[in-house]
Image (cartoon, rainbow, N blue to C red; front, top):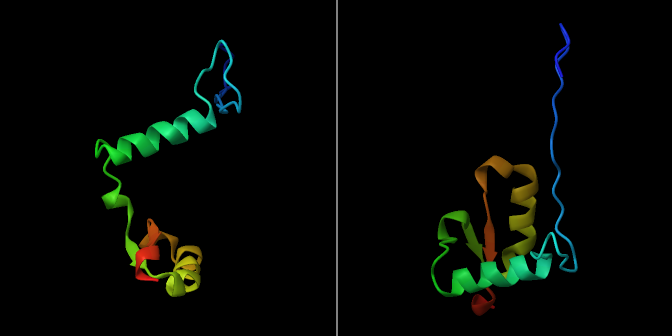
Length: 83
């Protein structure tokens, strides 16, 4: 569409279906399963996404830091083995 002085911006918002369809076989569950499989096979390295590792007792403070200083904390891992 061309109109002098008019700019049209568009976007396509994609949603993931809960049930597979003929057009979209990737559901939320299928995406989640694939990601966990890739992490388990060490084909997807998520270590750079974890900025802080805290024991369960430190979770409230970690969530507070995420809310108040989002630029400083990309991701927090709650280490349940440290419980």
